[in-house]
Image (cartoon, rainbow, N blue to C red; front, top):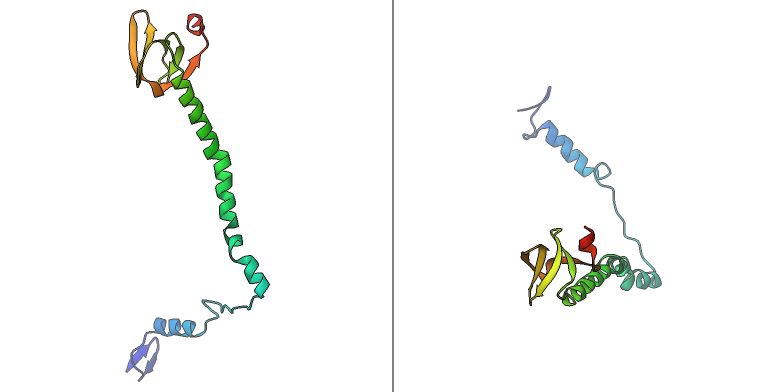
Length: 139
């Protein structure tokens, strides 16, 4: 004999909570509503499928390209041209904020004079800005 709460029953062993859960699963309207398929027109199916499904994704990539990628590529191209045009006597600022005058240009490194008789070697790519002539004298 099984006791369910206050009621005694000769039924097989089943808990009160299990009984309530089974009842809720049998009545689908409690947990999950029914979803019925709808027939679509042939013309509507052709429009909604195919390229139209990917149109928002393509539009997002186009916006990303024109807002972020293209300007960055343009800046990189301008920086590359500036670094290739470096020459002896140019006044520059490095990525670390050091201002100086270029004394020697190598393949990968540039020697920059930052004070009288003080020359440091920096990588070409760390040159961020080429200053107009005479700027260092004003500092």
